[in-house]
Length: 205
Image (tube, rainbow, N blue to C red):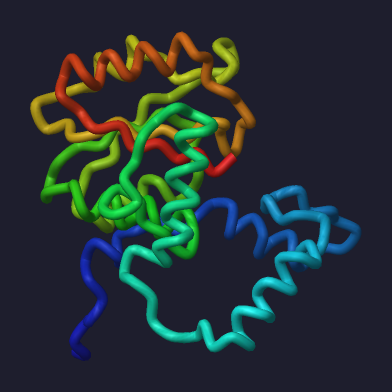
């Protein structure tokens, strides 16, 4: 019998439901896809020109592992200007190729095998898979239409166990479009402080 080289944690992952749906829809005609957050406009010309000019200037080599310093500095400045928070571009800002990579890096950096990560649901399709791949255990706290899919601080706190490491939230939410209230977010932050937990926040939208 041939040896199976696929890691057990990968083999046990379930395919994304939305991808299954896309495969079905691809065989149908007259269907308009509203499934992926793909912009309906082309990349703006100034961005194209900046990319082309960078290539012409030879900026095609390795950068710092954390990303180009000037970009990290600009991110730090933007966060300070918009949210009044201070992050040191030298050691508190990392540039990634996208949010999924950023979340996976964060999860693998903090999760020990068997530690639990609380996830309000519905949520983006990769959250549970990323937790599992990092060796953690996703603990879902379902939202409801009745409360407009708000994260429920009381239910989140009730899900905390000695194995809980972090609360993983994504608001504005994909797929529901729900926007967490200031009161709920403050309550979640107080819960995290009370129980000495991390909050991993996906703020792509």
